[in-house]
Length: 340
Image (cartoon, rainbow, N blue to C red; front, side):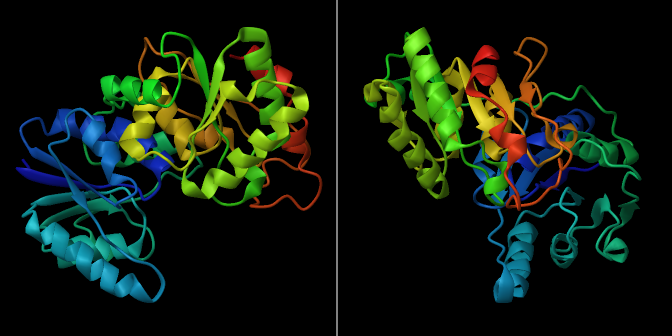
């Protein structure tokens, strides 16, 4: 039985959230072990909000010409933890090499990327495409760890979030909707700013609620476009608050937990919003929703709503649409509004 176990987390926020059911399984199975999560800096704060995680290890890593140096730094960080067992969620060779170089005796993971010889318990990946949560739980099940329910739960500081929302001018006693209009890996995954502006008009004009826009610094252009389009509709701008690029991950989780609902593209924010127990309306375009739909936070949480418009070319998985982006343009604001 392992005494000090480390789980190497996925590198992206959405994937990290979808790995939480498997993390919960590991926690139950190794009830007496010290459970650490090792993760990249953008993702690491997530696990400080996950029940049952004893410690979080930051992995500096590095890409491009820094990749080799990054792996060595990761190995140093892991070696300092004196772990006896490591479970790998990433499929990369580098992640397996890091835990091997760190001197961790038991190294478990999928035998991908020519790394099988670096693992003490290599596992064959599932033969067919499955939801990412199933992919991670298939690994832990193959390791003899019983699978629990596919719930992903994150517990942020709600009191701190309420104070912040009050400070930025939101009436926290009235419902508000969060927009997360950004998405990594190209514009094809993004619902149109015009549609978000139309939806804001419906929410503010018909319901009298406020709309709060969130995202990373890279999403500021998308949020600015929505704000610029809104005056054309005659909607009061003081009901639209642009908080994009102004929050860290724990703060974002807290904000999302206070919203009536979150409207998002296929993104990390979508998964985080569902994990804090808030209703999510997710707009999917070129990506496969059956592989990455948001997970519920539990049986008492609202079920996420996924909206798509099927056309001959979806899912194309392209970063940019080479034609007219019809999988997204044909999803109306009224349709999303009805799902709130």
